[in-house]
Amino acid sequence: MEPNLQVLREGDLDHGFAGLVRSYPGAGKILGCIQCGTCTGSCQLAQDMDYTPRRIIEMVRAGLKDEVLSSKAIWYCASCYSCTVRCPKDIKVTEVMYALRALSLRRRRSRSVGLSPVFYSTFSRLVNTLGKMYEAGLIVLVALRSNPFRLVKLAPVGGRMFFQGKLGLLPKRVAGRAEIQKMLAKTAALQAEALEARRSPGGGGVIDAAGDAGAHDGARLHGRAIPGSLETGVLP
Amino acid sequence: MRYAYYPGCSLKSSAYDYERSTRAICPELGVELEEIHDWNCCGATAIPSVDPTASAVLAARNLALAEATDVNGAEAVTVAAACSSCYAMLTRALNYYREDPAMRGLIGQALAAGGRTLAGTVKVKHLLEIIVNDVGLEAVKALVRKPLSGLKVAPYYGCLIVRPKGAFDDAEQPMALDRLLAVLGAQVVPFERKTKCCGGALMTTKEKSALRLNEDLLHEASSKGADVIAVVCPMCQMNLDAYQSNVNTAYGTHYRMPVMYFTQLMGLAFGLNERRLAVGKGTVSHAAVLKRMGV
Image (cartoon, rainbow over all chains, first blue to last red; front, top):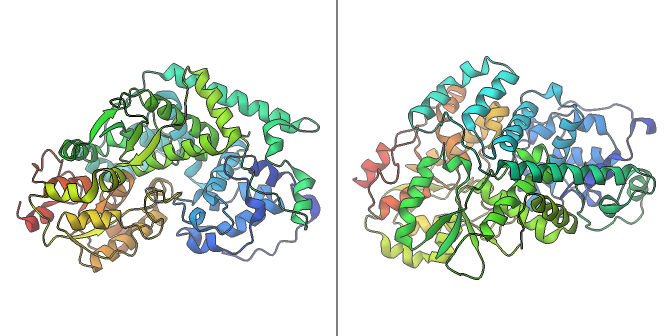
């Protein structure tokens, strides 16, 4: 990892970023981070990351939104939860990584970090449509949406699994697909509502309870009481 | 003992050997599995990366369906999940529903939009937990007809069966699988990396990193003289087994380490026919294991 000696100016920082991240499920406690590095020390992928998990948390708190959301680091998390069980401040680092990936996909900041965004979004679309995972379809669609040459590279593993009867060629579907669509539509509508409440002057609702926004977070970071464990919110 | 069975997508395709061996051993153990009607994908670790909230809703639909499963009038339904990722994601949704008021409200409303309700009384257990705690090792021991004597087994738990909660065993040094394998008569090798990660979905997106994690695991198992790695998760099985030759290519190694589901080893110890257990369906041959066992 190259040392990052970039000089930061107040205007480069997004003071609402920490609040936005904290509004995601499980991400509420990041302000309590003591920068001990236990997460990084526990991470088997830290050596491959451009910013370590400890650093990512601090960058979120500082408001380095663009750097975080376009980082490679967030896509190296394997969701092993080692950091989460070891964090002395009960920060669910894995859930924070989920939130950052989701934000990165939403803001289309993830174009330059390789296959991961395509893989996760394709997985999600397949399941939202079929109700179940369709492994063969996932492999082919990810390749088509990224680099079709991948199919050649994956052929040996695919072939081995196919001949062991481990690669079903036809998709399986849930009967209640319409029901799932309604649930997902309602989820999206509730998230939009929460986002609207967050944007409107004075904020409100669910998101406010999670400890909203900007200057507010900055003030807390600069010595005022760090709020407790309000892990609410569902946005955006 | 009757459970609402959540097989998950992998057990219906790439891990059908896990499902077949699970289906074979459960009747022996007195465990009845009633498959949850019209279950959907748990979201794995992929959908939380796209929408952490929607993934909890998707997983919660399964919990709502599970609560409607007939479990012979038992007061609370317990879900049996064999895949560690399903286990973790169903537990994640349940914990958000129980402990986070905002998430409870959202999940409840989203389920209601699809005509489902969730009371939140359902429990979620991994199959290993059910076998070790609900059935008990004494009962397992009584079923052993062909002890795995002389078979050196590396017990590999991986991540999601013990983390993030460590609900039924220690998150760092679990022993449930060690104890189970010992009861089957196996020689359990001390496996320091037992809760290290196989990389999960990173095998697709960050192959170089994932291969390194698997090389670490294969190296330790191999250097400890293990004949086989026992696994409790389809993702671990696939990465260690189907990608083992990719590890060998990348690292110039020559591993030929069989990777078997703990249910397959249980079935063999119970004297069940290896076909019923889908033994032999690994990319790396199971022949050496069977030979050592004298099957």
